[in-house]
Length: 458
Image (cartoon, rainbow, N blue to C red; front, side):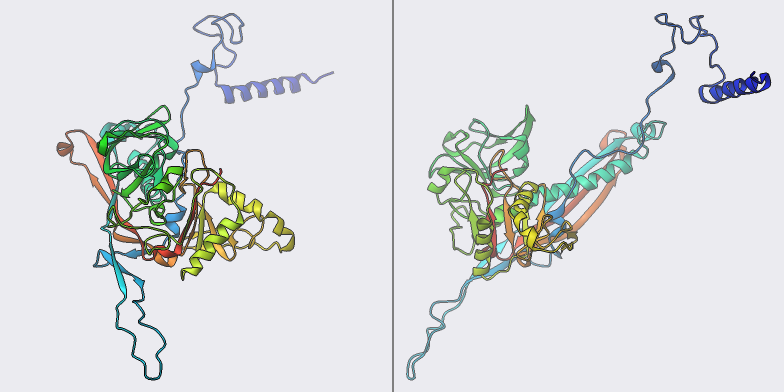
């Protein structure tokens, strides 16, 4: 027979437990409906909504890719007191040759020096918050210090913008029919061009329209419309055309630098010698294959996507070395990284399992074997994937760059500056505003030892 005192003790303990969790009113009458808690009559039972308010933690999680691997990998140098540099492009005519016993000396000649210059570019990021939002954000359920949050996010966005500009595509076929003052790109490709960029339109074989500046851009329905000045001849952009950069408002991109005339992602491009220009090059400047201003190897397939092969990469490495360089970095997108891993998969059985990393600037490769299942290098050259690497065509795979980074640098005129403004009268609003800006430029001291592979499948 149960012990009455023990039974009462257990019951009392249960009541105390329920009250500590649910409060002293647990199992009491509902004062609003007059029925017992737990009644099944509609409207009689307290719902979650009547006793619970959703609150949110102060941590704000990022649903954005903030990686900036290429920017971190590039060496950064002080701008210096000059805006340009010179590139030696030939040795002179017959200045070195055999001399017979009584023969004449070679004719005296001088080297050819090409002058290249580029002024620093300014990248800015703004943010702000109203005085009211600063106060309210400190209340329960708020994000806390909203200015500190926006400042932190602005810093991420600022460096991300720099990385995207460094890796922007130099040319793209429009995604639809535009007009005399517009061209269209899919939103995924719209980061190729920025407001202020000067662009050309390749309007069919051999017809290049006058360069015009991008004045506005707007996204709608997955398509970004770029507004430009009128193309010469009142031409209209179409999917069979090609828009390509003449000069940038922001940083010169790697894709601009590693370029050649008559190489691009549409078949008609091969019919013209016009190509992407860079720095102070005029519209008529030659970037023909083999010239000092062209990349060591620029491989496209007239807009037809193809699978990555080791031969394509090996050719780039070969051409860079034939031109006197030594590849220091293979830069590609994550899609091509895994394609390369699968191409080299068969070699894993012949290799050990040691893992190591390779440092590139302030970045490091993924841990991996020398050419194993997780790649760190290919032929001793560090491999770095970056999500911002340019694509050649809409829906296509990312490009691959084989680079001699001894001749690439980010020249910094002014390191990132932070300015805050609390002058309500100047703003004519009760707001606090902040600004981050960086003044710098991507320099290439030798185009001839950089290589690129485009028109790759995703």
